[in-house]
Amino acid sequence: MQKLSAKRKLVIIVGVLLGMLLGALDQTVVGTAMPRIISELRGMNLYSWVFTAYMLASTAAVPIFGKLSDIYGRKTFYLLGIGLFLLGSWLSGAAANMVQLINYRGLQGLGGGIMMANSMAIVGDIFPPAERGKWQGVMGAAFGLASIIGPVLGGYITDHMNWRWVFYVNLPVGLLALAVLGVALPKPERGVDRQVDYWGAATLLIAVVPLLLGFSWAGTQYPWLSTPILGLFALAALGLAAFIWVESRAAEPIIPLLLFANPIFTVSALIVFTTGVGMFGAIMFVPLFMQGVLGITATYSGLILTPMMLSAIFASAISGQIMSRWGRYRLLSVIGTGLVAVGMALFAQMTVDTPEAVALRNMVITGLGMGVTMPIFVIIVQNALPYRFMGVVTAAIQFFRSVGGTVGVAIMGSLMSNRFHREMANLLPPQMGQMIPLDKFQALENPQALLNAKGLEAMARNLPPGMASLLNQVLLKIKVALATAISQAFWTGALILLVAFVLSFFLREIPLRRQHHPDQTQESPGL
Image 1 (cartoon, rainbow, N blue to C red):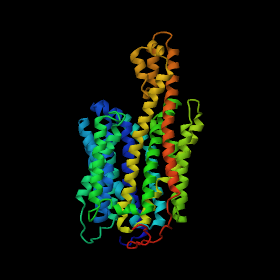
Image 2: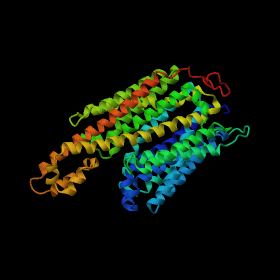
Image 3: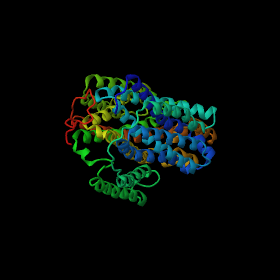
């Protein structure tokens, strides 16, 4: 990339942050508005598809467009990603039914995936590895900030405006990002014509989409060993085998297999996958535990994660600065994965009697580990591999983290649900279920019922005289069952994060370069 002034680099960073904030805010804002959207558009049975469509499109797009940006330049695809995201936002806001909304969310996800694939690669283009830490720490902080602001913004828009504005609000921010980056990003440099790996892209989609669908539906829509789930996993395995065969013969593979000959890349990919499994589980189950078991109320459920996210923002910014000044990373990796594993183990020990202060302490410890861990591995692999792989390796790390998160949420969600129902059967005597009206007792068997305080109060008022105390006994038993079930999920996450912690000790360390070396390959062991 051509030499840029410090002022122009800063303008580019602002534009990239606007784009990243756009994608990060969208998920939390939309989540808060979903009950209102469902009530107007109907289609409760399609609820999960609003999120699944976005996730499938964005995850599948990351490695493909990461590679394409290496061939044709970042500017073209980052602007394309913003444009598709804005088009999807506008169409989602105008959706007349759930099917339309799902399709337009897929378009949004495609744009979000393209932005994700290129944002950190752009930072890698304009800063040498030793300077990237502080900027990627800022980007990590932006994601954490979005998780705090998003629920509040989504709740405000839903309560005081039409829900369609949760999508329309993206337009001014996105247009500003388009204008800034359209001017500030340099034009792609014309190089030697290179081939596009269409077969690699096709087989990657065949591998990834069924895999993510299988893990998204297993244990919820279908049993784990049902024909649809096993069929999806079989199709994913065939797609993976075809992808490996195609990539081993492609002139310009989407994900070059030779990357895995580099031990730094391979260990980093394994760490981000395992931390993705564990960390997404924490984000999923902490609000359920805090509200359902400890009874902590929040105006917006997402605000329960605020202590975790604030500590993650702090740790992300500080670790980025340390990495840039020190020029080393293995100790940060060990500390980050260790803190997350300890935090998850502490979560696993919480019960119905756990004080709120202890729960908040555990959230802060986990958040600190997340903040240290999230931004560093992109820099590590960018530093370890030649410049021509910048887009590929950046996208690959984000891809493995996203797939790990999907797998983790599915596995831990299934474990939690199965254990909850077993504990309910053990803790509640049959006569208790017979004394409370059947419809109300069955409603209580859904752990989400514990989050609806108004619904529980209404249920108590409608019970026959003398049954209110019995309802309180049932609720206590349900909280114990839920705490035990979530504890199992946390222990599973802690064990997986322990693997990431051990892997960090095997992460080979080479000093971060303080200058760009686009053509240098001696710092790339294994290639």
